[in-house]
Amino acid sequence: MEKKDIHNSEVPVICRSCEARHRGICGVLDPDQLMKLGKQTTKQVRRADEELISAGSDVRTYSNIMSGVVKLTKLMADGRQQIVALQFAPDFMGRPFHSQSEISAEAATEVRLCSFPASTLESLIAESPELERKLHEQNLKELDEARDWMLTLGRKTASEKIASFFYMIANHVDPELEVGNGPVKFDIPLKRADIADFLGLTIETVSRQITKLRKAGVFEIENNRTVIVPKMSKLKNACEVEH
Image (cartoon, rainbow, N blue to C red; front, side, top):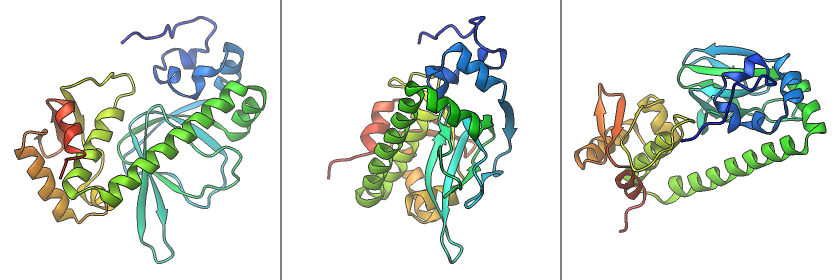
């Protein structure tokens, strides 16, 4: 895969080593705008299971996800929690022009973030139609993915749900990897209880279906955590089997 030159001298130092920015929202900013954003930017590493955003909190910052997996959750009045989405690099985390967050965000794995004040980004949105369009495109992409996931949860079998979950991870876990027909290797970012929550299954069903797909040669598992997909086409076919 051809990569863009990220060592342009006009680009702020903090942005030059950022491989994700070309696919993320910063890819539409010119050097002056990147400089404006870069002056307010902080890089941080957050541990797995650490809360990144709490529901109902004031929105003061936004972030680009540089690496790792973030899970978005909604909490019901009786304390039950539902994982509603996963985010990967180089996704944008936050909802511009919202005063409070309506969801919680938690690091599913170790996560690297590039964060900046909400006011700085909103100022750039006002002067950059390209940035506004990029954010709009991401919102539409997330809407399309949510609709696809509604189909997965509503109509697919337990085996197809597990295959769909692994297929999603394989396609998003590395923003610099052009996924072809395999092989692809990745660590499962969620605990089995979280996978069950996300897919609307029991933990026992998750374990059973993972074993079934492994025995069918759809993927291999090392150390109960690392997944190796020999052929992506076989995993894709397992996502929607003809009945």
